[in-house]
Image 1 (cartoon, rainbow, N blue to C red):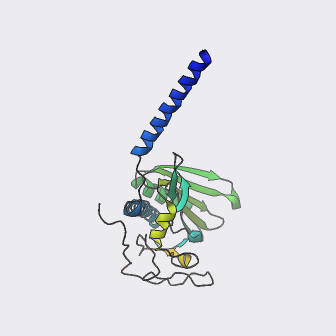
Image 2: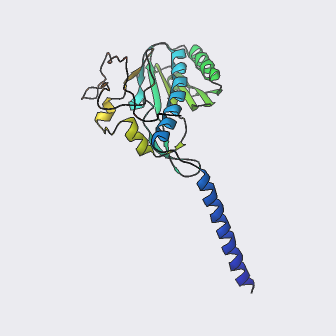
Image 3: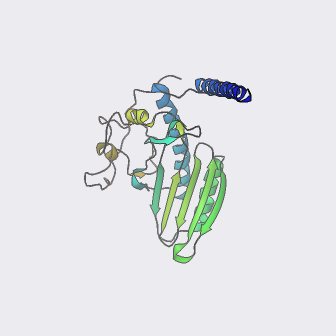
Length: 236
């Protein structure tokens, strides 16, 4: 008798749990189509604008885009709830002799704080292996890191703006208008400088090429005044 009651109770609990999960799932809307593009563009514009301010505060000049991480390419990820999502990879590198570490730390910290982010610093190693990190969390950037290696004369700045609900492949198809590698990679800017503009649309037609076929960046890079406008994301 007890076993029978236990089975009934277990079944009831399982059904209740399923109903709860189903109800929660039905209230969570994953953006698709225009809404997905608009969501991705808004997130990209917000975090990339903050990061531009950070690197310009450190050095108001040209930075290399590290390993193609321009920051607008949707990457598959899993959200906190375990669902399919998209993320971005953003990285910039500056090579400069005689780095003034304290000045760089102060400039980066102030720029992050201006974006309402919480800033901490950490130093690892010593001598030729010394590495100074400015780590900022919060806001649209979620996590930004400035890594200074004085002996190497390099500053590497990265951003990890999190994982957001939405299909990364669908969003990528809109961002790059169906263009695939290697053509896609050649349309990502090789540098970010004072003339930076947020770019979240890279069609084959009307989009400049920033890389030679042999993988070297075109220098000086092509200049653009009117970027192609995406046919997605219209409306509010």
